[in-house]
Length: 284
Image (cartoon, rainbow, N blue to C red; front, side, top):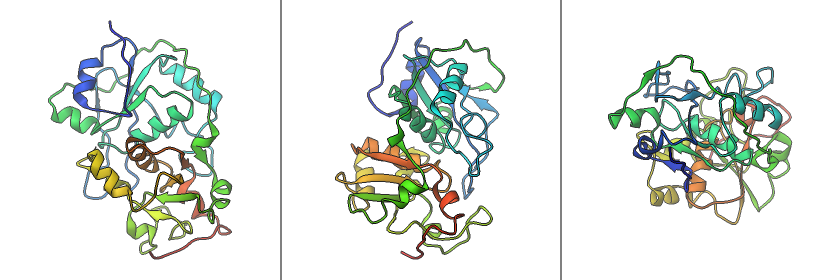
């Protein structure tokens, strides 16, 4: 079987169908139920792309005892859990989720934070796979041979609350919030009980859904148009959201548009909004 390499953080379902049997390609299902379910279904399918392995963000690749959801695990733990998924140093990893693009970008970013750049998000996820007429299989346990993955965690990819607090008045830094505008402006209550409403001071709002159309990333020119008034390439950009998931969709869009110096605020608003000593703003 052939091996393959990636030249983009985003691949189409046709590409995956042609390359899925290549010996170094690993497909990961990183589906999470949607935290805020709007008009679209936020549920989880009982089927998967054939051979896909479940990248369990919530229970395996997060610290389950942490105070805030989706708190990243340390590098050594990530390496061991990735090996148990059969991932190797030379694996080309394609990540998808059932909703189009939602939680898959989080898994993509976590691998990048471990220094593994042969990883991409499947544009449109399971929805696009099905729409293209490709087969699926029922989710059952599969036997996986342990891999030899060995990443090195790069701290610059994630920030904590103190990191964010330290950059609020720095003109070279910008915080970009991926939540819906009514949440950002504090016009509605947060879906998680006990959180204050509003946003991090001086942050700008770019809802992650603005970069998507029918669950797929917009064309590059449209992505560039969406973000050009929000942040520029001469800034260090920190993405935030509700709990560190959809912020990664913005990071994906920014990388596609050629931006560098990107990071994710891991705790995001679930952390910031629950700590009374941290400052907040409301309104536009």
